[in-house]
Length: 140
Image (cartoon, rainbow, N blue to C red; front, side, top):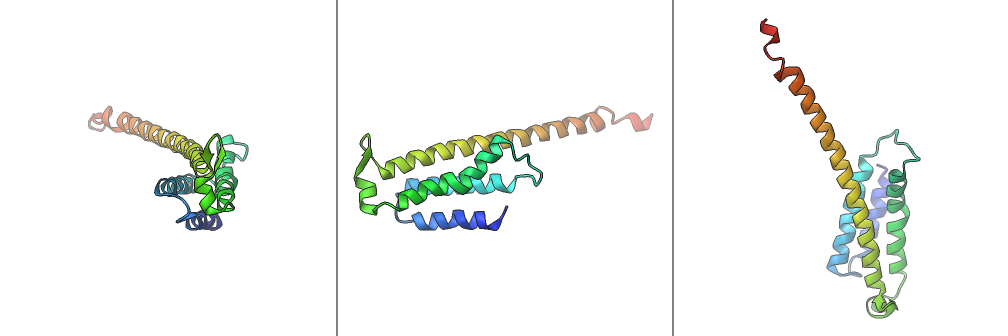
């Protein structure tokens, strides 16, 4: 994964520190961690038309930074107290947007886990078929 993406994400985390509550800061950290894991697993020859790949890159480069930058552009005191829409503050709206990104990335991580686990199962079947069911063949 390119270092600038990691640096950009870490910079966002530093910039929001102290401007959001612990729950939102924790959500951002979880999102950054999931992004770094998923981005590090991208194959070099990944299909650029894959919608998951596109969404992952958009989350890292646009959606997460966009949400945070828009929030940081607001006066801090008002962002926490002044209702923006349906009685929700900018802080609450940011938390909702982060929840959407977090759920999306958790789904991607679960899918990756299942894919990897399936590979482990297939490999285990191969080993069992090769060595366990034919273990006595060499003695014959």
